[in-house]
Image: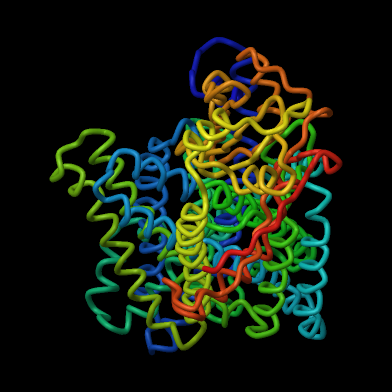
Length: 637
């Protein structure tokens, strides 16, 4: 975070600040732009293929598609993400849940709607996380067709091998190899730009391809072709896949380094490459077989396939780690069960690994590769996931601009409505591809949204049922004062979600053991609506009665809770706790379906199954195993 702050100051003349700024900008090239950097492998090709299937050919079609690609890059990526959304940070952090939390904090009356949009956006992101590795790796290896037709049969097996290795090495972290992401992706963009510029120069005497930058050609293409242009529009949007990473990785690199990388390098290189592909197609229509790789001389095909494969692996890595981060945020926000979170770096808190998420993603990616078998068949599915995610981000951004920035309603609508309308047009175009693969992200998003909704509803029902069985802590303290139980030396910590109720473990300890520790601490860990919480604001200590204390600890939704950290901060509040001499009492609930549940039976059973997948509190909160006493209870939900 210190790096981000220094990069944001923009202080001129300071060599160390400049070094830091350019290091962050280079890092953003590898992480932020890896996904959008692989789009030229397939976006233009698939759009032209769709046009040809509709009977649309010739120079106006090529110029129209290029014009649409360029202006989508300008309006959606440059205007919406680079200039607007990067300013909607939540304490310096970005991403779907960061934006959702920010919007909910300022638009209280619309909180349920915003929560629903955030869940939907996250659900579509997971679909994106499954499709991106399959799409990127397969499209990169499809260049082997041009090296030798005999290698065509190796594309899918090699894709699977690369994906197996990619997911296998996730548990080791990327701290050591991540330093190479920026330089490799920088070379990738420069080579892409050079290939496009070479074809523009080579075919300059035949076609003035630069006229495609005029929006007139894109609008003319839509106007003259009507419904036939709809199927093409959905595939044009593939040019901006990965733009959502601009905002998601805001906290890692800062606004200005990301903006500088886009304006100074990424946008020019992408534009040159797409224009080069267009110039090549106008000069040689048969090159539509694979216009990206045919930009380069045959001698460079093998190096380009290798470089493209490296770029696709980096793009896949970025979206996988994004899924890890999003899941950790979802856990903290109470949207999904506690899952195992492993830290793969001692120095970088963002380097995490979630085993179950990793292997679920891997299973999904492998199934997608086996089902679709090439990138062209997968293109429709990719577009649906990306456009849905972007539409949701636009609505959430509108709430932030209106409520947080204090813009008048008409002014906020005037800014965001046109951008949202463009995305809605592209989403509608992609929905025509539902039968051709667009059903996949819709199905995945629906399943994930159902699971999140079930977990949220189930936890509310469980809390309600548990609360009925619990006594008020003030009442219990009064009863104990009137009739004191036998006291034993030491400290007992009771983890509880409700700081006002007597924990079940405490009640069972009194009922069965008939003893009470000299010092009893009710510990509640809460999640704030900010990414991180300052240590000064993290812990609150309250005296309930003699021998009873209430400790409330807050963690941001991008932080992993730690009991050791809480106890360290308690010492600054004059509460010394020796973790090695403390007993931790936890309640382990055994859930069973209630005869009259508030949820449908299928949802009831789904919630119980999800609760069984949750990691136990001992491991999640990093409590010493030999200091834990678990008390089992049965609860009907």
